[in-house]
Amino acid sequence: MSQCGYILELLHQNISIINFVCSFISKRFVQKLTFFY
Image (cartoon, rainbow, N blue to C red):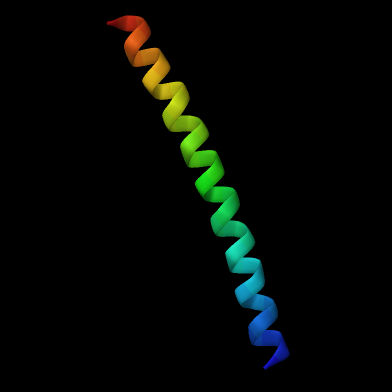
């Protein structure tokens, strides 16, 4: 049970990091699009 909670905690941290990276990349991408247009 504790190992399952540990894995869920790792997944939660990874998801938050992935969300942060995706939002950062999308912001950069939108800036480049607006720069070209």
